[in-house]
Image 1 (cartoon, rainbow, N blue to C red):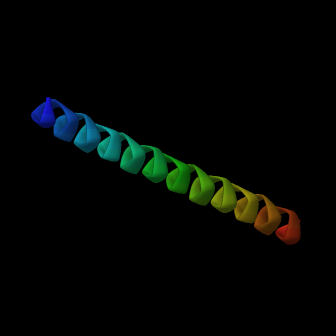
Image 2 (image 1 turned 180 degrees about the vertical axis):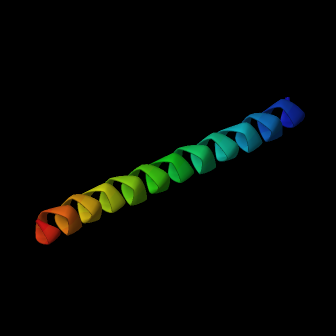
Amino acid sequence: MGGRQRTSLFMTSEEEERRLGRALTEATGSSQQQQGKQAKGGKK
């Protein structure tokens, strides 16, 4: 049981890291898109 709990905790930690990574990439991507739109609008 202990081994299973450890593996499950490790898997959950990996999933959390992946979720955090995705959230960060999505946040940065959205911010970059907004900046690009603003830059294009300013040029026009």
